Length: 77
Image (cartoon, rainbow, N blue to C red):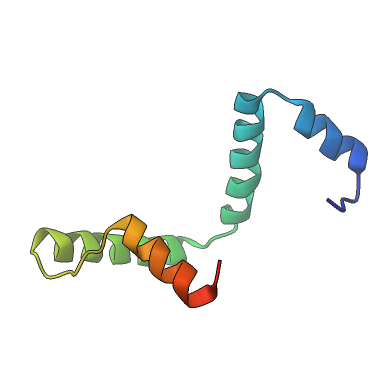
């Protein structure tokens, strides 16, 4: 992997799995930190609407394995 600082990257890879997971989570969370309250509210509203549709039986659900199989068939992976 091409990195700006291979020493930092190598040090991160040398961490135990649990610490790498926490580091990855913290790094990914830092991208979401810049979201505005309006965007967070919109996503929360969307999630609540989808849950309500599922609870009301209005949503058509598909099994996760079926969904991934369709994606693999469509995109060849």
